[in-house]
View 1 (cartoon, rainbow, N blue to C red):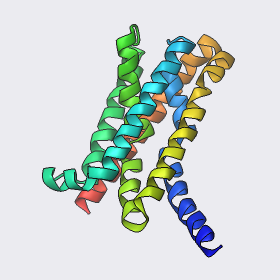
View 2: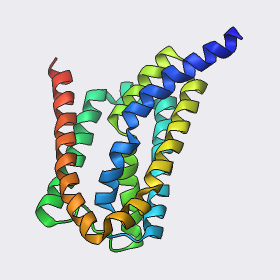
View 3: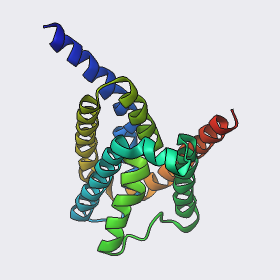
View 4: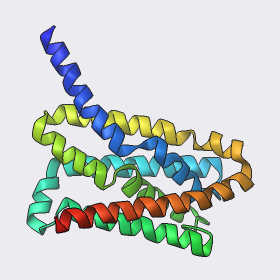
Length: 201
């Protein structure tokens, strides 16, 4: 009984931080803004690519993340600044040109699934940092289980995008995308600020 309770506690202590860092619910409006011109099938395909990218990146980080950081001299703060700059560029492009990414062909859909949705939206600096911290305190199998289950939750939430898109309609999606672009810019600036503060501190 004590073993079960201990494992349940360890699961909660690994699942919850990853859930908060991943913030799939908060990412849904951003995904809708990026994919406003896609058909439902195209959006579903793009989300599949995003989940595969997020899974591969997270697993790679758990296995060799610290080693790569040491070899290349990269710090987590570097990831925060880099991820923030990427998101800021997408947000500015949407506000100035009216579209974050050209989604006119299938190849671009796949690219959108990888960047910016797979990373840094679903699995970005916050999730990667959380994974590195957790594997220092808990067993790697438990961290991996929590990470994969969180990806399943994110997949389920993002799959609801088609329903939300139907509810909003084309005009609603266009309006939402502008609000989302401002929100995305604010998130990007926050990431850059946190990275710079950690670096200078």
